[in-house]
Image 1 (cartoon, rainbow, N blue to C red):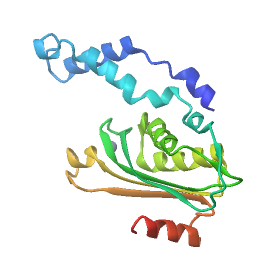
Image 2 (image 1 turned 30 degrees about the vertical axis):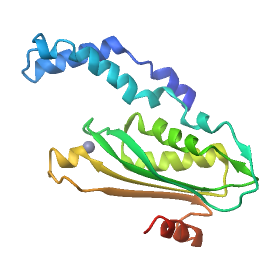
Image 3 (image 1 turned 120 degrees about the vertical axis):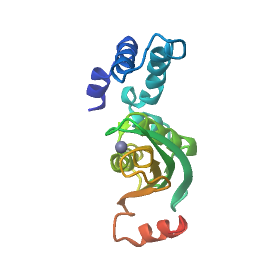
Image 4 (image 1 turned 90 degrees about the vertical axis):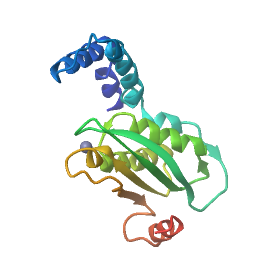
Length: 195
Ligand SMILES: [Zn+2]
């Protein structure tokens, strides 16, 4: 699936630049005026970065595992997350918390969990799918006993437009295996997160 995705996700920087130029014209701006002259190129370079996850296999960061006899939940809190809502192409941002319970001594680097979140976030997303994709990728790649991923984020499409409710945060939780819904380990992990 990921190889297919790589195949269809060549980043066409010139195409994005042309599209931004056309967008500025279409909203009634003058794309030739001084302040906007370089904007299409800048935005195209920015989108290459913001959507870099489309051209990555997010699970590949978990390829390196360490053997440690640690048998409890590892919980990494407050990983900053920046993504772009696919309905409005506006940012949503906040914190991700990633917990896993290792199996057969397989431990991953703590920074790898942050890179996994980045890889999944850097593409047009919805928060619910982002949360599930982090959980499922971690389960498939590291094969732990269980996983819990929680994301708290503010969506600019809620703040700047539509219902205009700044300060609203959305919490999404996905858990698998020994931390699946209804388990004591899920309750204990949520308690450790302060919920
Ligand atoms: Zn939105």
